[in-house]
Structures are given as C-alpha cells and as structure tokens.
Image (cartoon, rainbow over all chains, first blue to last red):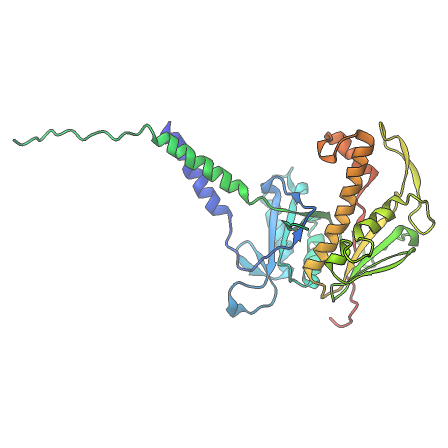
Length: 133
Length: 210
C-alpha cells in the first residue's frame, strides 16, 4: 500500500512542478468582480503579456508564449500548434486566456486579439483576479 | 564475544502510509489551487473578404462605451452622453448614474422609450412566457490605442455586472430563487432572456499615425 501511494505522490510532485512554466514577464492581472472560473485546464492556452522581468530587456511590453518571448505574428503558429496537440473533439472548445499586465496599452491587446481571430481561437478570457470592487 | 549475527531492528513503517497520504493530499490541493479566472468573451470570426462587413445597427439599438487614452469613459446612446472620469465614477460614486445602471436601463427599456432599443415580443417557454425584450440591442465597447488594460477591464467588468444583475433579477422574478441555484436548463432560459450582446469593435485609430 505505501508503495502505491508513494508512486502516486511522486507523480503529482513531478506534474505540479512541470506545468507551471516560468514567467519571463511581469504579469499583475487587473481586478474584476464578475469573473468566471476556467473549467478544464487541458482546454486552456495561456498568453502572458507584460514588461520583462529581466531589467536588461527594457520596460516595453513583451509577450510570452510557452517559455520564450514571441512576436504577435507568431501567435497563429502557436495556436495551430496547441490545437494540434489537442483531442479533435476538444479543439472547438479551446479557450485562450490572456494574462496581461494591468498597465499594458490596449493597442497591444488589440493586436493580439486580431491575431487570435485570424487563428480562429475565438473563445478568449481576460484573466483577472477576484477583487473587492 | 563477537555477535556477528546482530539483528538490525526493523523500521516501523506503519505510519509511512499516513504520511505519504498526507503529502499526496497536499500536492493534490496545491496543483488545483491556481485555477485561472477571468472575463470570458467570444471574438467575432475574421472578416472573410477584404472589405469589412459592417452590420448596420439602428442608432437607438446601440450603446457606445468609449474608453479614451486618459482612461476616461464616455457612454453614448440616443438618450445622451455621460462622461466618467475614473473607475469610482463608473460605479456610481459622485452622483452620476453608474455604468451598470445605464446598461440595465438600456437593455430593459421598461419605459418603451423611442431613444432606447426597440422591444420585441418573444416566447421564452415556461414559466417566463411571452415577454417584450430588446432583442437587437448592442453594447459596443471601444477603446483608444493607449487606453490602459486596467481601465478597459474595469469597464468590461461593469458591463458584465449589469448583465449578471439582470439575470439575477430575472431568476428571482420567474423562478423565485437566485441565479446560482437554477438548473442548467433554467439558466439557459434566463441567458436567452438577457443575452450578453457585447461587441468589441474593430480597432480604430483615433490619434492618427501608426
């Protein structure tokens, strides 16, 4: 019995560390009161937007896809890749969670939104913390 | 004197299972803790042709919510224009009607005003029945290139809050319970009664330049 439990334990330990990718950008998501929880993690793809954590890279807004910086034009490939790795039945349910820093300019967000439209990733979610307001 | 066959005391491993169970539950909880939450939206599909198909919306059916570069909000429909200088004013601090109340008034049009969206009778099934709704209203959220994301989300949040309150009121009125307690089917009925018709406009360049 302890052996089996240990096996499961190790499995969970490994998976938890694996999934949380390291952030390269500073993301302080805005607060909102009417947020909905995102069900089914396997259907969610994340896009992180914010100023780089590494000061040497400046303070301009950057976007992180997976674990590297990317340009807005790379979104389509990224979405196609993520879609391909999904179950075929799940593909229409794919949700893109935009985790953007609250000081980001809307121009950047709009560009990302347009790219997502082109990539037919139409279900999006503006990531937000449940705030007091 | 040499005790070559000394026995090694067996390690008491009976508590091991409990400890590992404890750790297991800990990791299970931790892995589920960072559930992401946010405001869900649906984007329109990309324009098929080069010339963008603009849907003609009657002026009275349109509520324009514009967030400018100074993060001020302007709400405009045929009734008039309301300016909000900051987030607090959006929520009704400072005497102005809150944005959510403007949206609710716009969506409901209880007074059947000719400046608010037209009412159409629609059947929503039991127990709602045939009620007049503003089926073709549109809340259009527009922004400037340098609007901050925070202000944009604050405005989005207020608009969603208006819809959520309408749905809550609808649930209380027709089902005598809160929206959260409804069955999936009843929720769909209420959602059809008050559909979220929020449009995020095509990007516009107000300031000029790139």
